[in-house]
Length: 381
Image 1: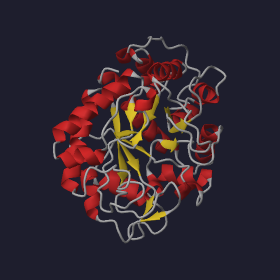
Image 2: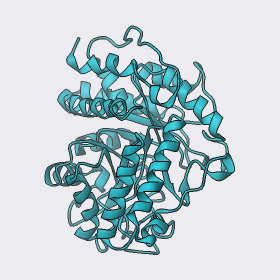
Image 3: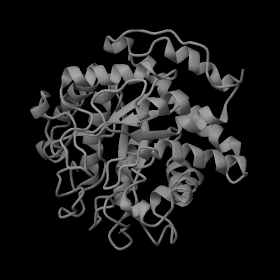
Image 4: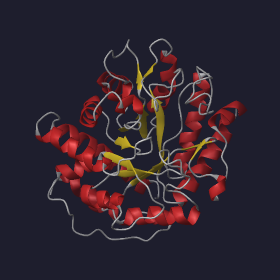
């Protein structure tokens, strides 16, 4: 067996022990050797519908059949405008995450956006405590409060089987009227140094709680005038290097488990592609210039900024060629696709098998993902 598969067995033995769920022992690996299918499956994270799952659920079939690497949970379904999606209460959420993990031979990354304030998936109406927005925390000028709330959030998520928080937001509040950052109170401050202070505190707090955190949205979404959920966002005239300062500082301190890229377009840096799909941004700046060697996750590849300009296979190819490790399909825009994970894995397999993407490129992402999942054990999950 390839050394790449050794973590398959070492990881499954301890899964969810820290959260109090049942331990299970790994069975025989259903993938032959160091399977390309396993590796590309680990590179996909997908959203799904359902408060409960069983062996017949499409998402479970993807976990078992594709080796899906992760899922993302929501409390609201955008397409149907329904408050019923994946989260309805504490006991239900614990059952859902525990069941998902039991079907996976490699620990799943189970993610939410629990930033606080308006962007919180675990809400009071479902029996969870309120949490302040990043803007309100930044306004206190007290990073210790940010650390305290981040630790409490991490413990809350951990106790409900969620192991990845897509937070904190490191976008600088350059444009307070920004419809997707400023108006939603998602930024700590218009001062990059203050964003660094509070971002550091949030990462320290979540790490103390055993949580993996993904900082976002690289290289900075705070100056945009538009929302990438709805279409292409051009920041050529508004973005500045100061927006990258929080990412650079916290990466240099070794605090970032994951970095999420943004679907923002800057003609002066890459005249062809938005940051998520740009090798100049992802590999040239984030990897090479800033020295980030951890897992890079795309923002949702089903947002209109990507979906309306690129086909699925083209988006998958460009995202991997750019240097991303995990391709996120949140499946919660205006077009739900039950088969999106299967389509993404099939596209990746074709691209490798026809030589478009080298197998070594997949190996590199697979190693980083396995190393990331090993951190859950190290942090007591």
